[in-house]
Image (cartoon, rainbow, N blue to C red):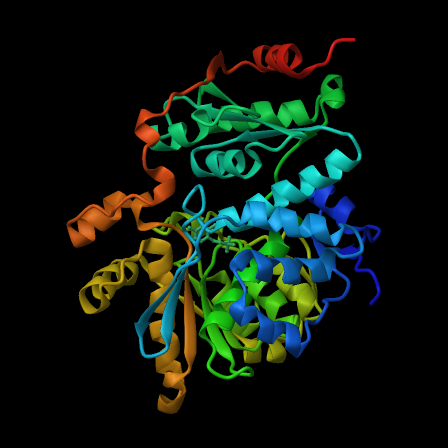
Length: 457
Ligand SMILES: *Cc1c(COP(=O)(O)O)cnc(C)c1O
């Protein structure tokens, strides 16, 4: 098979290798990288997945993309290291399941993508004897996800800036108790101040030597690992080898659902993808009418990680269906809407229904959901209404993207109890914290970078 190269969805930048796409993040024309063809797994390989642990399924899926650039034994070692936690599949009713993607170190499905991206970046840097310093500003969750994804890697250091008074105790502790290659600075300012300092550092030629990088969420290295759990769920739950599954994906920036779309093109038997969004319904409207309008500013819903008025990965979906959408959301060439409508259903779920779903799922099934997963479960109920009775006994998998204990206020309000902590959050209270403090001044920050990271000859 021909080696895969990666093109920009804006079509105005050269094609690159996986390594370059991974280390660059965004293409120079501001597009997103996409594989020029998608490798197809044969039936034997698909069949074999039913007996494999998660990391071995991940090996086969990622190897199909990486085999020309990363040696097989290294891919095997990286996935085994990244995926050392369980992926529970919970049966709820008939053949309706919830896949819990919340057992990683930050109790969110983003661990699946970020941990693999970190390990792949580290692999290339190690080989080239280079180091990278990842700078990130956070208002809470991004920082801990990045910190945990890169924690313990040899060729990557991480420095996180957070606004002193704007993160919760738990969020702060998830970053400040790690140590090793992860450093943290509390800024006496707001999130926007932290963000501005980081941006200024990226643009500062005096700091070129530091090899600064952002661990961008649109990186191709995050997208491909998100194809894996669809294969895993199907392999564990299928009754016939060619049985097709319907996946329901609570979606914001559409990275998660793109993973599923890629899995489908790789040969996974997917009947339909159901995209469940909150009140930010720009995609359902687009799918039904062909007209795309961003929602600015995005609407605030309790499924806060999905408050996205223009999903950045949408340009990848459009590309998959033969169209061109730029980073601003302007469509230069329409995708094949009829094909897209056949493969995808999209539903919008408002906050009232999200809350009601958390209550109903618990009362009817003892199924504990947090707001994002509840949007997914509600999306399944809508979809079941849209199809024939006989199709309702088929295989359905709803993705739960975060652990309920990350949203204790909502759960307490609706269900009147406190969810139990996941393993990754237990004991956090007693761990020792370490961080520095700075005023929100770029000069002070620059001096800090020079003192701590510049190698003096
Ligand atoms: C990021 C996130 C989502 C949305 O995922 P996308 O890939 O951006 O669509 C859903 N749920 C949770 C908990 C998240 O953190």
